[in-house]
Image (cartoon, rainbow, N blue to C red; front, side, top):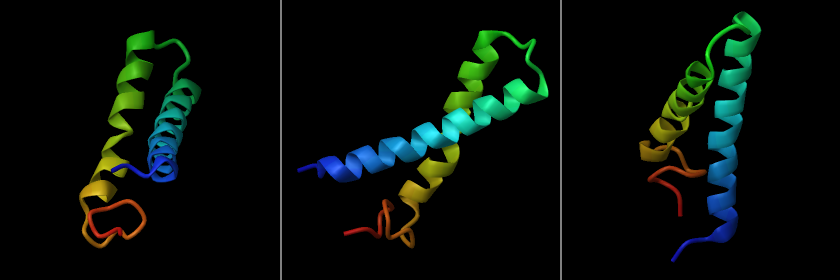
Amino acid sequence: MFDKAKVIAIASTYARAGVAAAAALYLADPSRAIKDYVACFIAAAVGPLLKAIDPKATEFGRGSK
């Protein structure tokens, strides 16, 4: 049903986006509350989610095999 390697690759994509966004927020303003970093990490999933629903994205998207 699920390809374990593909699920790990997808999760890694989400994690990279989240960590990069939270790190950028920290570098811009390290005095923010932790909830801001959590919100930033979650919001960073928007990019990979858009890729996931894109039928032209052959890596992980709806167009993948």
